[in-house]
Amino acid sequence: MSQELNVTEAVHESPFRPRGWARWRFLTLTCAVFVALSGLRVITGQDMLTDAGTINTTLAFAVPIGLAGLGGLWAERSGIINIGLEGMMILGTWFGAYFAWTFDNPWIGLMAGVIGGMLGGLLHAVATVTFAVDHIVSGVAVNILALGAMRYLSILVYSDVPGAGAAQSPTTPSFPTLNLPWLPGALEPVADSGIFLVGDLASLVIGLTTRMSALTLIALLMIPVTYLVLWKTRFGLRLRSVGENPDAAESLGVPVYSFKYIAVVISGGLAGMGGVFLAIVASNIYQEGQTGGRGYIGLAAMIFGNWRPGGLAMGAGLFGYTDALQVRGGGEAVHALLLLLAVALLAVAVWQVRGDRKGLAIAGAAAGLLLLVWYFTTDSLPRELATYSPHIATLLVLSLASQSLRPPAGIGKQWRASRS
Image 1 (tube, one colour):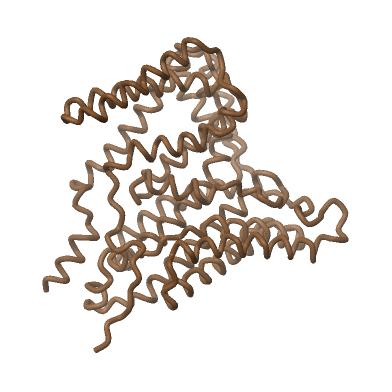
Image 2 (cartoon, rainbow, N blue to C red; image 1 turned 135 degrees about the vertical axis):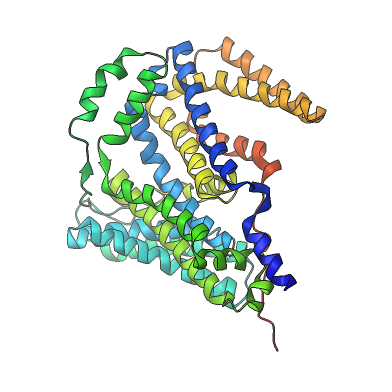
């Protein structure tokens, strides 16, 4: 009876009670960030901060990160660390592009890419669950193996294909795009008005309702689907119990090994879908190295989101937004974010003073003042620094969020079934 109580308490995650407060906090923070960006646009005159093009590009950059993060969420909720997400995305890019090109059908490419990622997940599950290999070692091995294997297959398959070779595939067919027929046109005058918040909301709606790939819509739907499955079904409760306390779950009749396998294979499938997005939606071609570390950034988004789908979506959006800004606006657009970041750090410093954490308050205030000086003494960021702004944002966000993180209790631990 005590074990049953332990597993039930663990999967309900008391740090987030009441549950409704967690949802309201997420929505409030999202709205606060959008209002801050709207105000920053008015102050700095950088319309690119919230225009429809930036919103559309943010989606394109955030989707593969979010899918990788969802893959990490499924695996780590079952107690398995999945560093191999990068390799599973690579498998998705190659198989997705190859089958889409071969059959001239992006949907076949999507299925193939997802299956390719699932095979990577299965390999990771066999190593970590069945043979108790260290999770980090297994994940790194999957990444290295996927990179080398896809290079070999490219040489084998594309050597005689015009326009292709060892490092890239031929051009792939595209997924259909979705547009609302009348709403974007009706909102364009409002967006062009530049009115604080009103114009930004209009740009947001336009960016979300024009030129959206069908795969983007499917990827966005994966977020609420993951939440409903993991938090609102008996299957999800059992899977999360496996990641929190596998001994207690086993005592209640939960097949721990099976649930770990299922979670890691689904994890690989989601990462593979992210790879398909990169190969077919983002570029219409497979290229070696096109994942660009997004599997690792997806893990960072998952950690930022505290192993929850909503927070993960916010983290993926943040990293995708900084990437979109540096691509569309270069150093000037990213430079404007220095002001927002400086104000945020000063606010955090004040909050730390209220919590009697003087050391953190001093560090936050010093960093905020340095960023203010940097902002007012320069007009733009160096191109090289702007290019790495998503990675810098990753490190900064994780360092600020580290104090409130609550991973599953059984994550990364080797487990063996009890012998009666």
